[in-house]
Image (cartoon, rainbow, N blue to C red):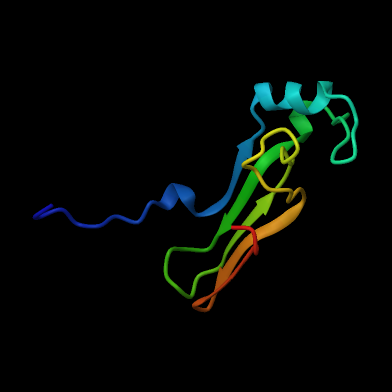
Length: 100
């Protein structure tokens, strides 16, 4: 758009936590154990879906995306990556999960 200046979204700097949705908590905590997953026993307040850590928005700034609770066995389109670093970028280089 003409005349519109880019503005860095400062609210996304630092640490951002995506909390676990109550629907998915129920799905993860009430399921029967099987070969691909066991029920979550922790309280919802202690869990998270994803956490992002960001220094800034340039190619050289650090960005890390950490996967918390995993819903892979509940949702066929979702990968199994609980407690893993799914994306890391810094100094113009990107290291991503092979499933993404």
